[in-house]
Image (cartoon, rainbow, N blue to C red; front, side, top):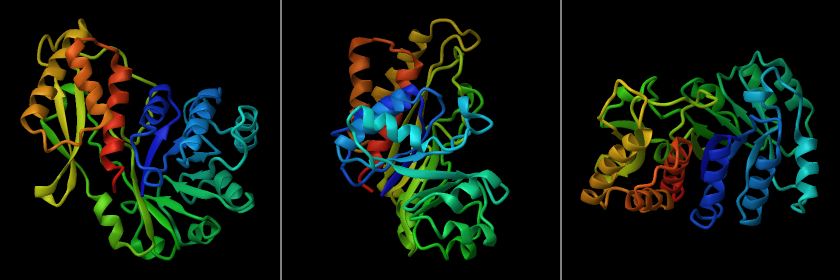
Length: 308
């Protein structure tokens, strides 16, 4: 099962809502961390996913965006707002985010929270922390940050990592980069029930960027000739790289490259809703803004992995 890790930002939530009907129910469970104090858009997304039969983990002790510094548990507020829109209770799985073994407030929460709940560990796990994690139904962890001898004792885990080789400048992206083999590798771990990643966004939280000198589009794909590992193809604009002007023109340059490559390699890419969005924009020559462009790449990435 696939567990994409997303922030509760506008276009990430929109990507999930637009995937309803395109991803198999029971194959995808998003892990959502709120970043805005206003929970309305998140509540609406959870409600829509629940109606479609898609379960979500929701971090109840968020610490990024407008929650920097921590605000305690938001579980009660979420439950109340979901009930107000008629979704009812029990529609999301409470998730405690633990930075690492020094995260005192999170550890206190997971010791006191009623079961069932799940845990998302960002950093490393110590043997002592493992004892507290035993209360959780499932623990999502990064095996690159903790030895298997430690997390191997946990009964049910989701293995995730940050597979996206994020660059500080779009100009620095090459043609292609390796992304991950976790969607195949997790099955070799007896206590792993699924895998996760940060889609094409990367782990580091960003409030959003400004105008770009270069527009780059990211398109994920699985390569059967390379053990079905996932790679990301990067398509970058090439005109006037010293100026932030004409983002629409730069988008169309990158989109032309994407469509040309996909057309010539049609069997390489899953024909997702996101890919169809790109094709539609290519036909209309419309530039929807970089937020929408990022949303489309997220949609394509999630749907591509939804069968695993």
